Amino acid sequence: MARARSQERRAEILRAALGVIAERGYRGASVSAVAERVGLTQQGLLHYFPTKEALLVAVLEERDQWDTGGPGSGAGAWRPDLLDSLVEYNAMRPGVVQTFSALLGESVTEDHPAREFFTHRYAQVRGDMAAALRAEYGDRLPGGLTPERAAPLLVAVMDGLQYQWLLDPQAVDMPAAFRDFLSLLQHEPAP
Image (tube, rainbow, N blue to C red):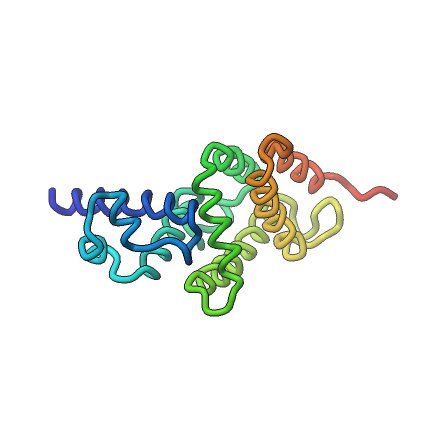
């Protein structure tokens, strides 16, 4: 019973942290602001997450868990039909997408605590995407690219669409644009 309550509180803290980071970015977010959202003192929150960096990594890991079962879950989590569903699902969670995008953007700065997470995550995701594309299309996609060459493009389209959608959701239909991209993967190049 106590363990279930602890896990529930931990999940509540992660949801609050998502909100605070989405609003303020990582550097503008504080442990005390997250604690206040869940009705804890700063010391109370530090019982669950001993540092701000530990909280950040937990938020990022939780987001990956929600989406695909986490990095390294294999090519099955990244099948094109499941990616389409994931993009559709993300369009219903602007706060989560905003948090992820803010952290991703900030992580490219030197010494950002999420930099290592994203560096590792992208290497893993590119590998998983290449495996998924290979399972779907074999050693060459219809356009002639190898799965390894197409994988970073697929990741870039997904993340780039998120930024465009966050900036102008009325002009960018993220799920439709992603389906258009998937259709491009299936076509032979023009002669």
